[in-house]
Image 1: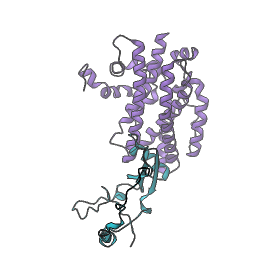
Image 2: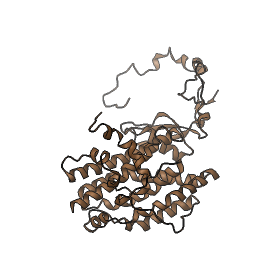
Image 3: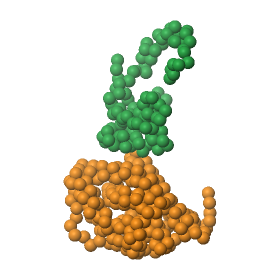
Image 4: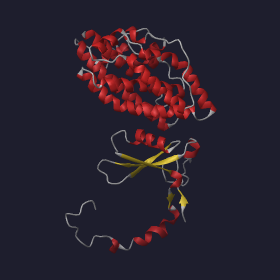
Length: 250
Length: 120
């Protein structure tokens, strides 16, 4: 049972870490200074969440595990993040849309997780929910702004929907460990969040003069460690120092 | 007498007199400039902290939150579009401010404040 809780906690941590890392690629490259700071603030929030989950996972694993060893030394197939968060940041529209999809998901997830039987997960969810509420507000407004503004911005967000929609299904696909933690009341069965998520996304999309795509073949596998090639490109940066100079500190 | 505030890239001091290159903030972005006022936890009033670009008031408040309150500086934010701020002309500083210099009797330094009077 403990292994299941570890897997679930790592899944939550990996989601936040990888998206935090992707968003951090905007640092110094944002469209304007103010939004550069906004997106990197969100990165820092996500990495803060990841640290909380990794620290908890490390305490469950014991031995010599630390938050650093879990983030920097695990292999690609050991990561349990959804495919959505590892996709390239692409342009601003794609970054915004991904953040909106993910924040809406995290918002619903953490709202439920506040009542987890596991005190640590409940506490992390409660702390993170405030941050996520702001991420959701910020990204929703941007989706509306881009969808509803110029032909260029509208086309860009359409392209982003086209690229990212196929990764949204996995968010609500229940992995083996999610099913088990949901059954014992420590975790959340993500499939139960899907309907509410869809309603909220439809709401924002209609304000943004966008429509939800029709039936789409969904890409999945990330939660079980089957990733797209894009995760490896994150690791070349994220894990380079620890792999080249094991145990280095600064 | 009244001038619209002319904002320069690095603050209010006209840099043409300092010999540097003027980069008008309007040229850097199509988004209008906003002045930001923050009230700190202890503060009673909103204080000017700087400026930023945003497309509308809502975005200006969010940008202000991200740019100016990252270190728990504030509990309340005001924003106002810079173009609505009217400023005195620095070249008229002499006639505006110097006449007050020799009128020290206007300072409340000639009587003692009771201890009960706070925040003076």
